[in-house]
Length: 123
Length: 106
Image (cartoon, rainbow over all chains, first blue to last red):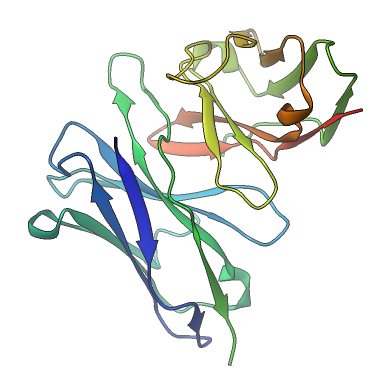
Protein backbone atom coordinates (compact mmCIF):
# COMPACT_ATOMS: atom_id res chain seq x y z
CA UNK A 1 0.00 0.00 0.00
CA UNK A 2 1.02 3.62 -0.38
CA UNK A 3 3.19 4.97 2.41
CA UNK A 4 4.83 8.34 2.94
CA UNK A 5 7.47 9.17 5.53
CA UNK A 6 8.90 12.52 6.55
CA UNK A 7 12.53 13.09 7.50
CA UNK A 8 14.71 16.04 8.38
CA UNK A 9 16.18 18.09 11.22
CA UNK A 10 14.04 18.52 14.31
CA UNK A 11 15.60 21.84 15.25
CA UNK A 12 16.08 24.93 13.08
CA UNK A 13 17.47 28.30 14.13
CA UNK A 14 15.38 31.46 13.71
CA UNK A 15 15.87 33.09 10.28
CA UNK A 16 17.16 29.78 8.94
CA UNK A 17 15.64 27.39 6.44
CA UNK A 18 13.49 24.40 7.35
CA UNK A 19 14.15 21.50 4.97
CA UNK A 20 12.21 18.24 4.99
CA UNK A 21 11.97 15.26 2.69
CA UNK A 22 9.06 12.90 2.13
CA UNK A 23 9.87 9.41 0.90
CA UNK A 24 7.08 7.73 -1.08
CA UNK A 25 6.72 3.95 -1.25
CA UNK A 26 4.15 1.62 -2.73
CA UNK A 27 3.48 3.87 -5.73
CA UNK A 28 5.49 5.85 -8.23
CA UNK A 29 5.64 9.55 -7.57
CA UNK A 30 4.92 10.06 -11.27
CA UNK A 31 1.51 8.43 -10.89
CA UNK A 32 -1.59 10.58 -11.24
CA UNK A 33 -1.39 12.10 -7.79
CA UNK A 34 -0.41 15.33 -6.22
CA UNK A 35 1.84 15.32 -3.16
CA UNK A 36 1.39 17.64 -0.22
CA UNK A 37 2.75 19.20 2.94
CA UNK A 38 0.51 20.07 5.89
CA UNK A 39 1.59 21.34 9.29
CA UNK A 40 0.09 21.46 12.77
CA UNK A 41 1.43 23.77 15.49
CA UNK A 42 1.38 22.19 18.95
CA UNK A 43 -2.18 22.07 20.27
CA UNK A 44 -3.61 23.72 17.18
CA UNK A 45 -5.32 22.79 13.92
CA UNK A 46 -4.12 21.75 10.49
CA UNK A 47 -2.61 24.21 8.00
CA UNK A 48 -2.03 23.36 4.35
CA UNK A 49 1.39 24.39 3.07
CA UNK A 50 1.33 23.33 -0.57
CA UNK A 51 1.10 20.64 -3.24
CA UNK A 52 3.28 19.44 -6.09
CA UNK A 53 2.67 17.28 -9.19
CA UNK A 54 5.43 15.21 -10.75
CA UNK A 55 5.58 17.69 -13.63
CA UNK A 56 6.77 20.29 -11.15
CA UNK A 57 3.48 22.18 -11.03
CA UNK A 58 2.80 23.58 -7.57
CA UNK A 59 0.07 25.20 -5.52
CA UNK A 60 1.01 27.07 -2.35
CA UNK A 61 -0.80 28.54 0.62
CA UNK A 62 -0.90 32.28 -0.15
CA UNK A 63 0.12 33.09 3.41
CA UNK A 64 3.35 31.07 3.03
CA UNK A 65 3.99 31.36 -0.69
CA UNK A 66 6.81 33.90 -0.43
CA UNK A 67 8.84 31.56 1.81
CA UNK A 68 8.01 28.08 0.49
CA UNK A 69 9.46 25.86 -2.21
CA UNK A 70 8.28 22.31 -2.84
CA UNK A 71 10.28 20.14 -5.23
CA UNK A 72 9.95 16.60 -6.55
CA UNK A 73 12.83 14.15 -7.09
CA UNK A 74 11.57 11.48 -9.48
CA UNK A 75 14.80 9.48 -9.34
CA UNK A 76 14.43 8.99 -5.58
CA UNK A 77 10.61 8.80 -5.52
CA UNK A 78 10.44 11.61 -3.01
CA UNK A 79 9.51 15.24 -2.65
CA UNK A 80 10.78 17.99 -0.40
CA UNK A 81 9.83 21.13 1.46
CA UNK A 82 11.95 24.23 2.01
CA UNK A 83 10.60 26.99 4.26
CA UNK A 84 12.82 30.05 4.50
CA UNK A 85 13.21 32.76 7.15
CA UNK A 86 11.58 30.69 9.87
CA UNK A 87 10.41 32.04 13.21
CA UNK A 88 9.00 30.43 16.34
CA UNK A 89 5.58 30.56 14.68
CA UNK A 90 6.78 27.90 12.25
CA UNK A 91 7.25 25.39 15.07
CA UNK A 92 4.90 22.54 14.21
CA UNK A 93 4.50 18.91 13.33
CA UNK A 94 5.00 18.72 9.57
CA UNK A 95 3.13 16.03 7.65
CA UNK A 96 3.48 14.88 4.09
CA UNK A 97 0.61 13.18 2.30
CA UNK A 98 -0.60 11.95 -1.04
CA UNK A 99 -3.27 14.22 -2.44
CA UNK A 100 -5.57 12.64 -5.01
CA UNK A 101 -7.35 15.27 -7.03
CA UNK A 102 -10.58 15.28 -9.03
CA UNK A 103 -10.32 17.86 -11.76
CA UNK A 104 -13.91 17.20 -12.77
CA UNK A 105 -15.15 18.15 -9.31
CA UNK A 106 -12.32 20.55 -8.35
CA UNK A 107 -11.75 18.58 -5.19
CA UNK A 108 -8.79 17.03 -3.44
CA UNK A 109 -8.11 15.16 -0.26
CA UNK A 110 -5.16 13.77 1.70
CA UNK A 111 -4.58 10.03 2.04
CA UNK A 112 -2.41 8.57 3.42
CA UNK A 113 -0.56 10.84 5.82
CA UNK A 114 2.92 10.30 7.16
CA UNK A 115 3.61 9.99 10.88
CA UNK A 116 4.69 13.60 10.99
CA UNK A 117 7.90 15.16 12.22
CA UNK A 118 8.16 17.84 14.88
CA UNK A 119 10.27 20.81 13.84
CA UNK A 120 11.14 23.31 16.53
CA UNK A 121 12.44 26.76 15.65
CA UNK A 122 14.73 27.91 18.43
CA UNK A 123 18.21 29.27 18.96
CA UNK B 1 -9.95 34.25 1.80
CA UNK B 2 -12.32 31.33 2.23
CA UNK B 3 -13.00 30.07 5.75
CA UNK B 4 -14.50 26.93 7.26
CA UNK B 5 -16.07 27.07 10.71
CA UNK B 6 -16.50 24.07 13.02
CA UNK B 7 -17.83 23.91 16.58
CA UNK B 8 -14.89 23.49 19.00
CA UNK B 9 -16.47 20.54 20.75
CA UNK B 10 -19.28 18.01 20.47
CA UNK B 11 -20.29 15.44 23.07
CA UNK B 12 -22.18 12.21 22.48
CA UNK B 13 -23.15 9.16 24.50
CA UNK B 14 -21.93 5.74 23.37
CA UNK B 15 -24.28 4.20 20.84
CA UNK B 16 -25.86 7.51 19.94
CA UNK B 17 -25.43 9.59 16.77
CA UNK B 18 -22.80 12.29 16.66
CA UNK B 19 -23.17 15.21 14.26
CA UNK B 20 -20.29 17.54 13.45
CA UNK B 21 -20.91 20.55 11.23
CA UNK B 22 -18.62 22.55 8.97
CA UNK B 23 -19.83 25.90 7.65
CA UNK B 24 -18.62 28.06 4.79
CA UNK B 25 -20.04 30.40 2.16
CA UNK B 26 -21.86 28.32 -0.48
CA UNK B 27 -19.99 25.27 0.81
CA UNK B 28 -22.60 23.06 -0.82
CA UNK B 29 -21.13 24.06 -4.19
CA UNK B 30 -17.78 22.58 -3.22
CA UNK B 31 -16.64 19.14 -2.14
CA UNK B 32 -15.68 18.41 1.46
CA UNK B 33 -13.40 15.84 3.03
CA UNK B 34 -13.24 14.86 6.70
CA UNK B 35 -10.31 13.66 8.80
CA UNK B 36 -10.12 11.95 12.19
CA UNK B 37 -7.12 12.62 14.40
CA UNK B 38 -6.74 10.65 17.59
CA UNK B 39 -4.41 12.06 20.27
CA UNK B 40 -0.78 11.74 19.29
CA UNK B 41 -1.59 10.29 15.88
CA UNK B 42 -1.63 11.48 12.30
CA UNK B 43 -4.92 12.49 10.66
CA UNK B 44 -6.85 9.77 8.87
CA UNK B 45 -9.22 10.38 5.96
CA UNK B 46 -12.73 9.22 6.87
CA UNK B 47 -14.77 10.81 4.06
CA UNK B 48 -13.95 12.45 0.73
CA UNK B 49 -16.07 14.22 -1.87
CA UNK B 50 -18.75 14.81 0.74
CA UNK B 51 -19.80 11.22 1.43
CA UNK B 52 -17.37 8.65 0.03
CA UNK B 53 -15.70 6.36 2.55
CA UNK B 54 -12.14 5.14 1.89
CA UNK B 55 -11.47 1.46 2.25
CA UNK B 56 -11.40 0.42 5.89
CA UNK B 57 -13.59 3.22 7.22
CA UNK B 58 -16.68 1.84 9.02
CA UNK B 59 -20.12 2.37 7.52
CA UNK B 60 -21.18 4.32 10.60
CA UNK B 61 -19.34 7.33 9.13
CA UNK B 62 -21.43 9.28 6.62
CA UNK B 63 -21.60 12.79 5.27
CA UNK B 64 -23.74 15.37 3.55
CA UNK B 65 -23.21 18.83 2.13
CA UNK B 66 -25.72 21.45 1.03
CA UNK B 67 -26.26 25.15 1.32
CA UNK B 68 -23.59 26.55 3.59
CA UNK B 69 -23.07 23.47 5.76
CA UNK B 70 -21.38 20.10 5.46
CA UNK B 71 -22.11 17.48 8.09
CA UNK B 72 -20.20 14.46 9.34
CA UNK B 73 -22.49 11.93 10.99
CA UNK B 74 -21.26 9.06 13.13
CA UNK B 75 -23.99 6.53 13.84
CA UNK B 76 -23.72 4.22 16.84
CA UNK B 77 -20.74 6.18 18.16
CA UNK B 78 -18.09 4.10 19.86
CA UNK B 79 -15.46 5.05 22.42
CA UNK B 80 -12.79 4.63 19.74
CA UNK B 81 -14.41 7.46 17.77
CA UNK B 82 -13.31 10.00 20.38
CA UNK B 83 -10.93 12.26 18.45
CA UNK B 84 -10.52 15.60 16.73
CA UNK B 85 -12.30 15.91 13.41
CA UNK B 86 -11.34 18.35 10.64
CA UNK B 87 -13.24 19.30 7.51
CA UNK B 88 -11.39 20.38 4.36
CA UNK B 89 -12.23 21.82 0.96
CA UNK B 90 -10.65 23.53 -2.02
CA UNK B 91 -11.16 27.11 -3.15
CA UNK B 92 -9.33 28.88 -5.96
CA UNK B 93 -6.46 26.37 -6.09
CA UNK B 94 -5.94 26.48 -2.35
CA UNK B 95 -6.80 24.02 0.40
CA UNK B 96 -8.68 25.11 3.48
CA UNK B 97 -9.13 23.24 6.74
CA UNK B 98 -11.72 23.90 9.38
CA UNK B 99 -10.49 24.65 12.87
CA UNK B 100 -11.37 21.18 14.13
CA UNK B 101 -13.98 19.70 16.47
CA UNK B 102 -13.14 17.65 19.53
CA UNK B 103 -15.59 14.76 19.79
CA UNK B 104 -16.03 13.46 23.31
CA UNK B 105 -17.78 10.13 23.87
CA UNK B 106 -19.13 9.99 27.41
